[in-house]
Length: 344
Ligand code: ADP
Ligand code: MG
Image (cartoon, rainbow, N blue to C red; front, side, top):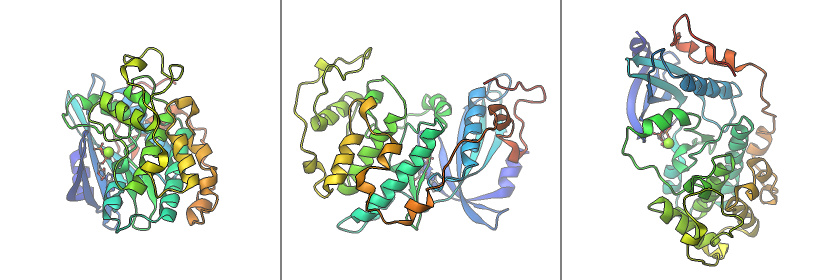
């Protein structure tokens, strides 16, 4: 029945992405004037009582974030349960369709590249979206140009976040290589995964927008760390995280590279901000909120700045409420009539 609901509502047009975790299709939304949507199929492990509570909660968080309609986060129109067997449930997430991702945008940019004022505007929007996620305790964890969408009007929209625990199950099922190039050093060292990991990725992306090629292109975790240290220098022992597998002494000492060699087209203020994103120690890395007030953005004259000034404060609805309505638009109540309400 659920399959019919999806089949009747959306008509696939083309496959637009095949990531590590499932396929993404461009489709027409037949109930809404034929607007384009992006359908993302994800498979979730089914437990005895239905979907794992972690999945239901994560979908509830996505729904909750969606209620704010942040301009720099991709719209989530719907979440449908397509089919269910004893072993897995297929979920379809229905997003607004955005023309291209940042990878394509950078590839298509005519010489000599994206104008510096455009980069500044996009960076501001990226940080606005990220500050919004972080203020709701959502860490993106996989920020990279492929997960940043760019509308034809130059609006930035964050995508592919908030399903980390669903993904970690999926990871085992796929051999697709996940890129390491935007990973923070503490992630590569398996030390911590808090909000600063996303600001490291922002730094890599900021540099890439000027360079039009990635900043650190490592082939393995250790190779990636080596590439990072070639630029920022090998960190001091005091900065090296405790209880990690790799000792600081595994890396030959080397001096940091002058930042202007890496991004010759970036101005002085941009470079000072970049260095604050690329701080090895996550506790000294600049936050999204602080970055928005960096002098680099002082002369930004763009609608983005005024448009996004409204506060996106959290509303008071409980996790319980959010959870019960997580799948409501598809009329799916996965855990049956005797479903347990999650405790916070
Ligand atoms: P994955 O988990 O497979 O990485 P994503 O959500 O990142 O899934 O989607 C994969 C790709 O599909 C993206 O890199 C992007 O190019 C494209 N894509 C994703 N969402 C949309 C969307 N809403 N509109 C247009 N393209 C999208
Ligand atoms: Mg992705």
